[in-house]
Length: 49
Image (tube, rainbow, N blue to C red; front, top):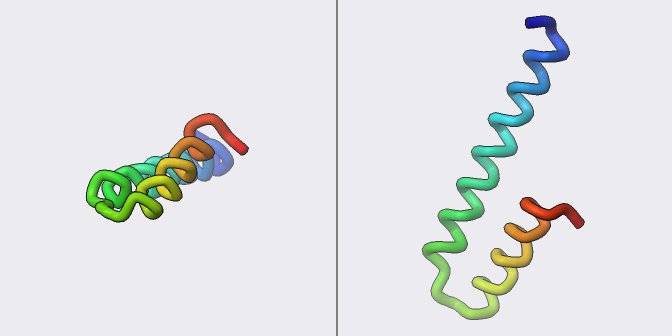
């Protein structure tokens, strides 16, 4: 794998970690306002802006 391919894989891993952290925060949130904000962020993560 070339350097560009390695950077792409590393970027995907970082994005996956960020999504999993966001999902954990969403799951643990109790405040309805925070739940909505985190849900909106997850939607943007999955479906884009």
